[in-house]
Amino acid sequence: MSEAAMEIGGVNRNDRFTRGSRLVDVLSKAGLAFAIVAVMLYGSLVSPAFFTSGNLLNVLTSMSIVGIVVVGMTFVLVVGGLADLSVPATIACGAILSLGLQPMIGPLPAFLLAVGLAGLIGLLNGGLVGYVGINPIIATLGVGTIGLGIVQAAVGGVIVYGSNPASAEFAKGRLFGIPVVVLIFLVIALVGHFVLSRSFWGRWTLATGGNYSAAEASAVPVRAVKAGAFVITALASGISGGLLGLTLQSARPLIGGGYEFSAITAVVVGGVSIVGGFGSVPRAIAGLIFVQLLTNVMVLDGVRTPIQGFVLGILIVGAVGMDAALRKRGVA
Image (tube, rainbow, N blue to C red; front, top):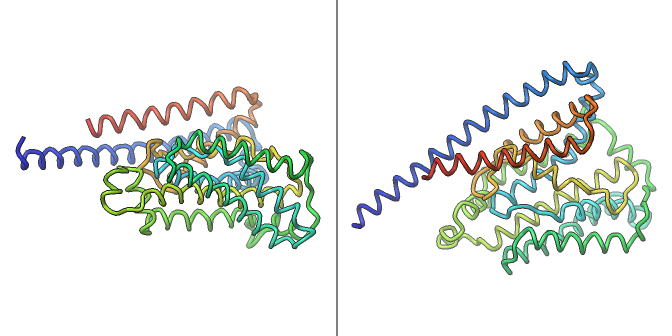
């Protein structure tokens, strides 16, 4: 084949990939908007408590705790890191240390140190995935298991309680009528959106996830970028865990259980590609809103927990399947 023909073929393939990405974007946005409205309408019919300020405030608060993790998990999926399964251990680290260190160094230093130590888990994950080349699922699962074991040994498997009432009042407080936890989530979401969509690091993240070899050939520090995604997720999980501990004023080693599944569900349902190279923080948050509202409606409707998990599992499979099918059509 001539050089010109190869060039034309490459352009056609790129054009088809672009059209496929746009198709995924349009369909997922329209579908999510419709799904969110449908869930809200169904919720209003199922329970008169759905649209009460108390219920919506509880949904917003719990959504914010998960949402902070979602922002970090978006970077992992976009960079092609599949998922971070060490999130439960990282959340436990943030929650337990932010409370357990209060009597020794005070609430704010304890919180900051807890987040920093949680970031070390991400640094280890990033090193194993980005530089050593270990499969992300295996690496993060192993690191998470080790981290959780260390946390359990440190506290003896018991519950750690807060000792500073002022920190609890701050975490549960409101500013201009909005819960502080929600405001912190919004700030982190805005920063995450800016980094992923407007900074060179975000461009590197998208490039690495889209075509690792091409990004490496273009002098993108692909190993550092891939490692950095796991550090970002760990820091976000540490913040989430610290806020969760301050809000509840108690923490146990298993406090973070299930948060990784909730975050992955939200990100995937939001249309972020599981294979990397495509996605954004607003899309992931839209998926989070849908999943949280759906879960709340199921709780109000008395749906049993196993059935809730079954429904969320179907959502993940459906979202991944649709992503794969649309991308295959776009680049075929």
